[in-house]
Amino acid sequence: MPQMMPLTWLLMLFFMSMIIIMTISFIYFLPIFPHLNMLKLSSSISPKWFWKW
Image (cartoon, rainbow, N blue to C red; front, side):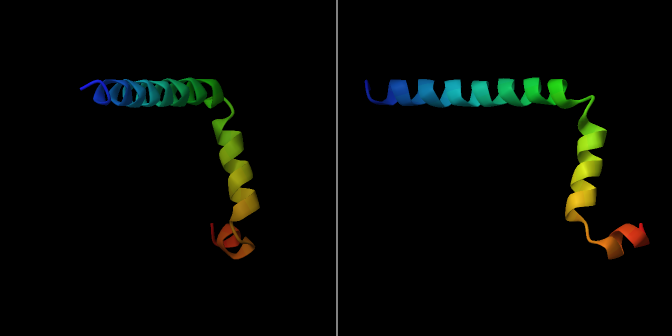
């Protein structure tokens, strides 16, 4: 099956690249993660929830 082989290779490469990118981004953004989380909370959460918390 010549048509099947490139598709499977593309899928494999895609999944591998996604996993690599996710791991690299996680390792790279790990020190900034609490700050980013606080920024997200302050930007998205409503004041009522913030006061309750």
